[in-house]
Image (cartoon, rainbow, N blue to C red; front, top):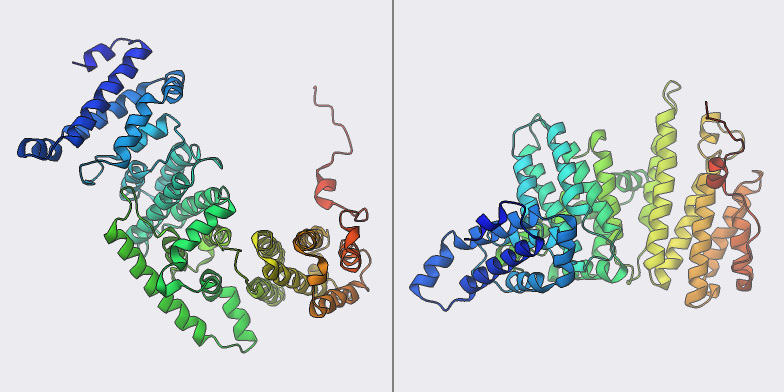
Amino acid sequence: MIFPYLRYRPHPQTKINALHVLIEIATATAYAPRCTSSDLIRAGSLPKTLLGNMLEIAEKMSGSERKTVLEEQAFLCKVKALRHQPMIAWNGNTWTSLDEILRLMKDPGPVDFRMIFDQLSSQIKSGRGVTSIATAVRKIIRNDITSYVTPSTCFQTKYNAMNVLVDAGTLAWKELSGSCREPVDILGEIASALSDLGKMLDGEEVHRIHFEIVQEADFSFNNFLDDFLGSIDDAIANYKMRNNQQLKRDHDFKWNSCAKLQKLVNKKKSEKKRTHGNDGLLAKILLLRWNNSAYGPSWFKCRDALDDVLEMLVDGSVPLACDRYLWKADSVLHSAEIDGTNVYDRQKPAKEARTAVDRNVAYVLGLARKGCMETKLNAFKTLVKIGMKMAEWMSPGLPKWKLDVFKDQMSEDSLTDAMMAICDSIVKMGGIKALSNQELAIVNQLDVLRAPMPEAFEGLDAVLDVIRDPTKMGTRDEKRVKSLTVLKNKTVIDLTD
């Protein structure tokens, strides 16, 4: 009775009226009093058919028609009401069409992405080549998830989007790992999308995700995530091995934690506390990152993206040590120094050394920005120590390939800018006097180390000025900004011909 009116260029209001009729029938079916006949109808194909018809109409609507539906809100309110309290128990993908309708209409949510997960799952299990699957996965993620989610999207929608992505990553790992078709490209696409979504989370949203896991008895200590990330990092393990630090405790902690994380994920899945999707997002990301066989060079991009996500989810409201960032940078610098003895291939270790410093400086600054006073002080001290490691690579008399690593001085400028940003934050939270004699002594050591190197760590002068006189905050001396210099065109090229 409805679809014949929609076949030949129907009026926009006709489509909207059809949507209202279908959602009213679906709601009546869902909320009908319990009896044999109503239970049989609910258990049959009618609910899925009704919602499928609504989705079909929504997919064929133009952008302006969807905008009208969004502005009116009448139909979408009915969809949300049925979505939040469907009287029929969750059954397969019967109700996923409701989320798809909300997503197509650009409703702010909350929206789930279970139907998108079905599409991702179908691609992963298709049996095609990994490259083809990765391309299809990338297209689905861009068109249906990252194009919809924005920083202003509600927390639940962001959470659901990340939840679906990590579920797809876990599925890809289980389906393809160990076969001739390693899922590194697929996981790389998923990890990159997770990183993009993680950047949209604000401090309160990060705290909510983090609190999800620390409220469990096995993970109740506040710095669990920080400790776990340190225990699974190969660079940190190499650092501790060189410095004769105990590794058995980290090994036992890692394996015990992974077993408990898997137990938590299984429990959340069986509980189905939420109608749409499951809790346990952070636990699932940690398990995906942990996979101990993913240690080949081809996995580094994927692992780096997952590390970026996890660093974003570290809760800065509790005091945290930042030593592991120094250990990671030191370990890579040490390995690069050894690999650099090969005169025929010094470009790779030089690049790895530079990247390790820049990434860990960024991590420390990110943690300091959202951290408490103690975390900021620890972050400041760590940055100074990383600077001292850099100074060791810049000392006169070293081989040219080592001196060239930080020759453009962009990394040291990033480091001193990060130190200044932390000083600014410390001043605003209670004064630079919070820096202890120990921190001040370390800064002076870096000042001494840079003395034989002209123009090295010029930004440190401004940092020292603020430490000695906090009123000078914001009046730093003019300093070079290499990143702007290289982007500035000094000549005009005529391309008219």
